[in-house]
Length: 418
Image (cartoon, rainbow, N blue to C red; front, side, top):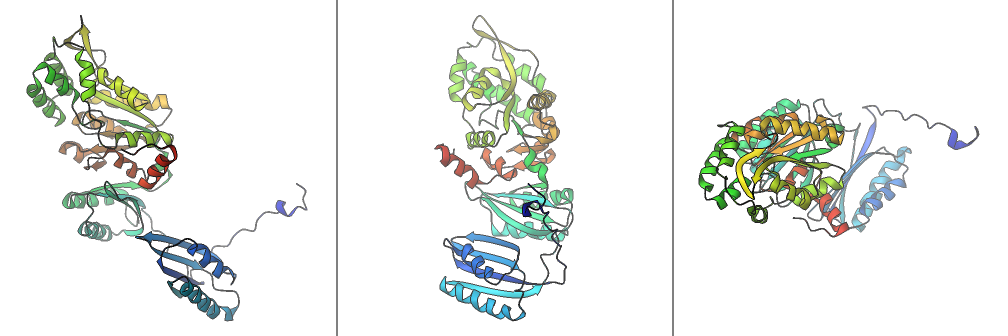
């Protein structure tokens, strides 16, 4: 490329617009159909205006399209622009407004956050209450975007003007009162930088407690369930409770493993969550206080990248009532998260952990984002985010991934969404 080539010339630096410059807000609305956006901007293009900003939204087949543009250069051309826009809108069976004003959108204020709201259903009363909380805290809702309409309604709000920590506290209280889920995350590129998701298994990835499935075959289900519940509430040391429960399985034929594997029920949305994350380049692992006799099967079934769990000791084809190797307890889960992150070459700040019990708390607190999924009260109070709907793929919405993106990917390879 030589020095006289126009392509070699540097582009002139664009000048920021001043707050007192005149602008025109052009708004059209009506029944949506292909060609509206192209038609409006072709109409405006005939007058040589520059586009400063534009936004478009379609709700129940009705479009609202707003364009913020500079006035025409010729002083007498603005009236002709207004007449032409209205004439075009009438031909398209739309309504139009052209509003003269000063300046661009007001600058976004400091303290920006993404607020994800999940409702099943999402009531108008709940939206009003959350909006009031944001306003009372000094925040402003800058944008709203729907992430999903089923099996839950999920919307994302971009909020500015209030610190993320304060906003999280305020909205957590309102979410509890309105019986909805709200997640608040600081705005920024780090949100999309998450690259490793690690989840608990029992009552998270699956609907069951695996040791209780084994106990049902050993005839001690009720006693094991009582100990399990106390451990998940944080009332008992997990390692001690694990040994006590496993001891009740002594003498059980190890061939029962195959039966238990068939009894395990995946949580709704589990396959969709894992499949979608892996398509987007995430690595996915599980860490369980349960047993490798079941988690190994889940790794193969779901194509997981990492797994850690306890192992039931077997001698002469029967369970001994003991576990072998390093016990995966509360502290152990956090250690395995760190190991998985190291193997995946992902900083802990770029990890997501999901769990429901007290033994998941260290892992949830160590991760970049900790999600309490249908969790015990002690876990919901301590976790950064709580989700209380029975669909595991709602975690995608916390990462800004919409249902439409999931379904579009599924259609490309013919995979059914669970």
